[in-house]
Length: 213
Image 1 (tube, rainbow, N blue to C red):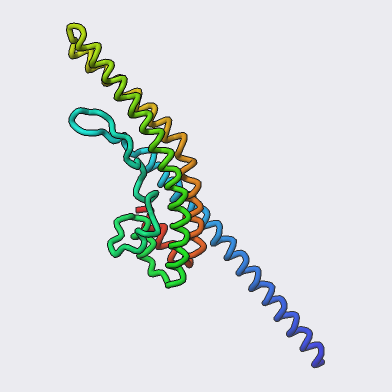
Image 2 (cartoon, rainbow, N blue to C red):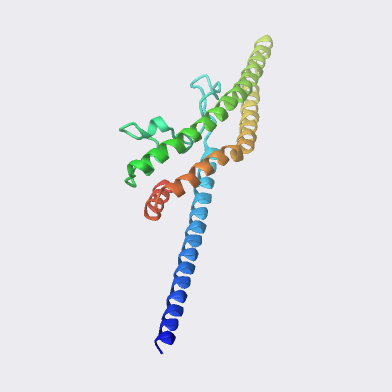
């Protein structure tokens, strides 16, 4: 009888352990799925901000100045920015707001450092391409003005041509951004995924909610 009772107890304990392990596994998988969805939402949100950033102009003479970063602030998060007392960058502000432990803060800095290197490479290439686009626009505009000065200037016609030239540049800029959006999203997604592993569930939910505002 004692052996029978012991065997039953052992069987019950085994079943409970299996059920607990199964619940933990399901909970972990569910958490990972939720994190992945949140990461995708944040990545898409940043990509849309990038695509919607207007083409910057240079001032009253209406020449274009395309050598600024042209990136939304969340893409410009840096490890050095993490250490400043005043965190203007929204990503840095949000990750700091969840009260990191010292270990987490170190891991976040490392993740930001890797991300920053990747973005710097992209920005260098972008500046070079944008400089070429700007040079072509300025050269074309100067040629229009030169031709206008050589004949009786029709101011209305000249304005129409300059507007058309600007539209052409904006179209090229849009195509440029659409081409680069996936390139920018890749390191940003890696950063978001890494942050999802560093932060606990409560921190991650608070961080993603903060960044989505």
